[in-house]
Image (cartoon, rainbow, N blue to C red; front, side, top):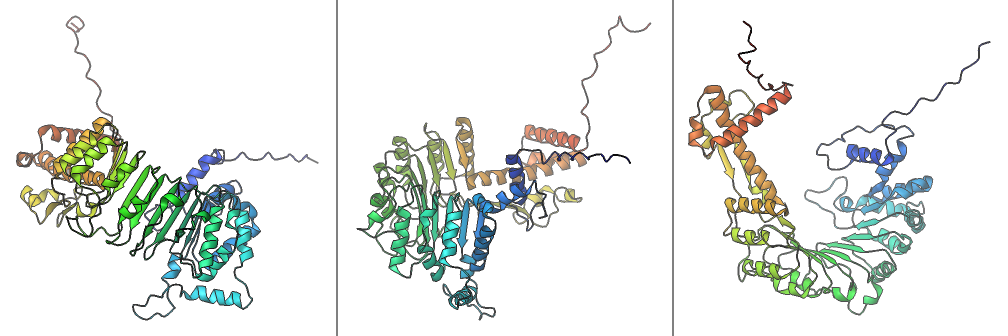
Amino acid sequence: MPKRTRRLPRPPSPFLRLPVEVIDIILTYAYGPGDPSEHARVPYAVFCRHLQPSFARFLYRDAPVRTLRALQLFCATLRRRPDLAVHVRILRIDFHDEYWRGPSRPEPGFLPSFPEDYEIIEALKCRRQGHGILSGQDLMQLWLQLSGLRVLILARLPPDLETLLCGTELQQLTELEELHIEEWRHEHDHDGVQLKAQLARHPRLRKLHFRYMEDMPPLPSPGRQDIFNAQISALSITCDQGGCPSPDFAGLFPELRDFFAVTATEDDRVSRYIEQLPASVRTIDLRRTDNNLGPPEDGDPVWDDVLSLLPDFPDLDTLYLPYGTFDKEELVPYLRSSRIRRIGFDWDCQLSDDTLSQIVRLPQIEHITLNHLREDWYAYYRAGLPPIKQPGILDADWAALQDVGRWNLCSPQWPDGGTWEGLQAFFAKAEERDVVVDGTALAIKKRYEDWRQEQLAIVVEQGVQRGDWSTADESDFSWQEIRDYMARQWTKERKEHFITPPGPAPPPLSSSSQPL
């Protein structure tokens, strides 16, 4: 009887032999957000046991929960698989979609008022009747399991869930570093006080974000500073001041380093916030939600001078300003006397060519963000003309291409004293000084260059295929630009068709080596 040979195990595939960190990166690329298509780059499938840990880490690293049923399922899953809880780093309990969802047959134009979400109401009725969908004990166990949670987001919570959350021990999230509270209005004052008291007991909490579009955030009132976390280093606020005084940020957050504020209406004053900040602040980022009001003028209610308050912050090194908060004549002298290394400007900020030129030359400036030009105002179009690579493009003459109705460059609305030539000079100086530049101005620069390349392609195609270079004389392209473009195109064609460029010519034969 022949002996049965033991089959050796097959070695894992090369992909499975990669380090775990590399596999995590590949899965993040394949299934991560940011894909413009409706589907993932790779279809979901059943993974072998070697890949399941990496896929679980990816799926549970950032856990979104948008309904009560989803929250119940999330809690039940972690009870059944406690090993998955260690992968959760971000938990988003966000009921924003439920807030706007109406009944199955809504009346035309009907939007339910918070929290009249019918699925939530039915679920809460079910729990009240004793059937149970979610309890405070479920949340207590959830906090105990999420030992590695770093970021917690609570947005538009219904009142019953709010009460459950406030009744649990949030301080069990010992690794929590960042908390987002969005549109969470406490029906009972004691709930808000209890939540703030729990926040004060978080030793690692450093970043706090509030987003309230129609109200002020639930910060402690004067005299209650003792119940809040004094170790917060980053604070972000989006709210409607509604005429309310600004909280005493210096008293509430004496260790504050980074401050971000977004106004909800044109009547809000960011200067009220700046007046209450501690002198230790190093980053101030101010923005407006409504950017359709146009540049402010003297006496305009939008005007809100912030620049005069900034000398109170000697360690300030990062500054982002919206329109109407500074005078461009006073901006450069302030920057010259400050320690600011990163500066940014929001839409409609009045920056002239001279102002940009002076800013980019300041020795301490390392990073400039230019969002003062609206990107959607800047485009080029070729209405009624076929694309460059389509047959028939040469049937269009240069005059038609120059016609405003068929080929046009829609320029942005330049501020007073701002031009395209000045922006070009700014980019050239920034490149010379190794200053990092980002923002919409960078996209506008690229679109202008693309528009020039379209025109240059027409000139070259007509010259090469027809032998007609008259359009080159009519355009403002130099012959050097034309030669460089042709060289780039020929190199590209060789690479696409795997054509080897000709080698150097052999040296001529000498007379002594020629045969007789």
